[in-house]
Image 1 (cartoon, chains in turn blue, purple):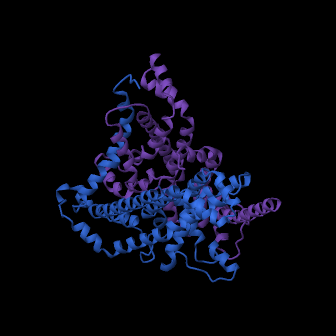
Image 2 (image 1 turned 30 degrees about the horizontal axis):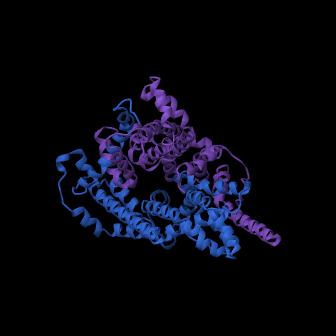
Image 3 (image 1 turned 45 degrees about the vertical axis):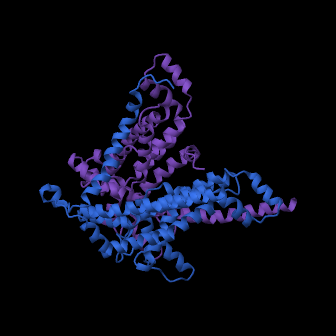
Length: 298
Length: 276
């Protein structure tokens, strides 16, 4: 293509590039730098009080019992949450894909709607639903109707994490369902017709046609969901503040607390880089698995 | 064949019933929220509260604006949302630059942009806070808006869409003496309506829902957004569930209305983005 002006493309891309450089790329290097210092609120006011402390932040954070606890909780969220999100959203997509009338497209809207709503608003609403008082909380009222004793959803350390996962599932399945639906509609119907003629059961059609054809979407949804759960923040922040006994504190919440409530910038930066490395490793690991899968097929 | 069709029909009915049950679970929190927002708080905390309010009241919504500063939060949220549309324009420009020009560094710059998608917010939040602090922009609306103004995902989607616009059209305009910026605003933008609609709605929703960053940057209640205000309200009026539900309703219902109005474009967006 003949270009009228050699400078034109740079004119178009430079505002976005400059903003990304300042607010996305440069911050990584700053984070790396300050993670080796003891920068805190005092240091922010007077830079001469900031000193290099080498890898002390990393050593301390890896020995910090609350960080260990937050890492364990985050792992729990990922291990329980990701398979549930993938299975429920895939299941919903398959059910909605059964028909194509008004009813089914309406259902698609219904299941998608929680995904677009404000997390804070939704967290406030669910805190209310989870209220342990039987006169106030809807969930315990429903349990009472079927004769089950009230559950202290957010107050019991062993139940609180699951309560947050239920909310996140409710909110997170819609968008993934849409991704699966788009993929399902891309599978040629002839495959199912041929299988039907051969007498393959619905279960076998699902196993040998649907799931293999959706490999890429399943991969995509798993990766984005893992990354999302690793950054889980709003729900524990609004609903439990990480309690009871830090049983719902996520790594993100831990970093926010140390960074912006305790103003330990260097310490929190070290923690954020650990999280970053974990995210990169997990993504690369998943990507490798995906590439290997594809090779086997060829 | 007849029995096959019949079994297909039964299948559909069973699936329909499962979907309806799931659908009720999906919307129930919204219904409960909206109905509770019209109740008097005394009714909510009393033992014999039903599903429908015994006496409907608008007092909760009035209190949001009179007791809490929801008017201010609403104004801030709308300003932030308006600026994020400026950001969308910058994304469109960058997408166009990458889609329609060959230039030195094109590929490496584009890969760099895509790579920024991998960076979690937790890594950038402290350094960005420090940068804005140096610039004197903490506790300002500009500080809330600037870091999120452009985004890799938006640039990527604009580039994908604009690649499909024919080069001949641009050549013809150049031969007629149109400037590059004129071509962009008068030819490319009007042709990009479908992707602009998708991005516009997503930008609005993101701006309306933004929480973590305004929470970090705004110390003064003057600059709170609706999300931050609602979180504050939960802390201050922990036992006033009716007021909390009114606040939540005020945040959720406008988005649902916008979503239902424009849902066709949003759902199309999933095909435009090619996530198949």
